[in-house]
Length: 212
Image (tube, rainbow, N blue to C red; front, side, top):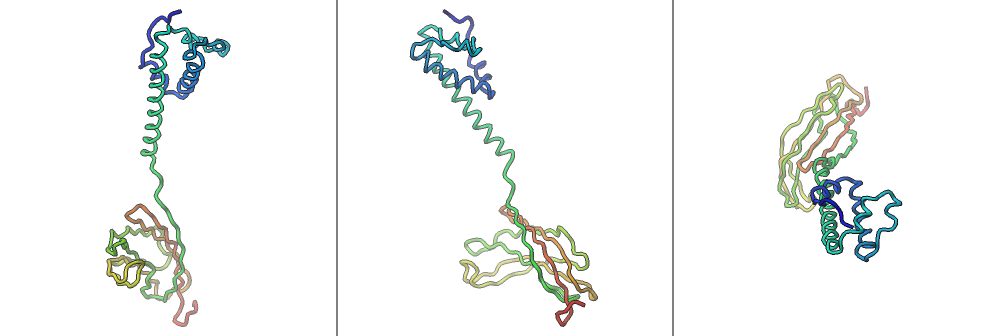
């Protein structure tokens, strides 16, 4: 029995690009191994409603090996296309950057600049990297926050015996007559993509250490 028409690689490739087509192709290859390559007819294909695939069991003997090899190559191509599709989807949807939240409480005196944050970037070779970007995400209710540029000297910092690097320094200052708790949030974005959310509570107390 001969098959009318030609099986083109283009048509078969379109079929393989669909999930159903891939499943059918895997099933077809298994059928080749069990029926065509071993010389047996596909006995139960018609019972499964796959009459069009059952016809392939009667392909002329000289075309069996060519058709089998072509189907195997197309199956590999479809698998590679699926792999590249997954990689493309991963590239379009990169993982979210690292996000860390820290909470701190700092004591302060009324109407006095109080350091609430120090931001540096020290490389493994003890040199300075790009400083982070700092944003006041939530302003304090009563006081004010300012960030100043400066330099930091340190000894025995990680593997660095001594270093001097640029830094950003954040200060908080409350009104002269304010005591109590003031809250603010600072967002710090580092060059490597890490983001840190700092929730800071400033406890403003009188000269004797008591809230007025």
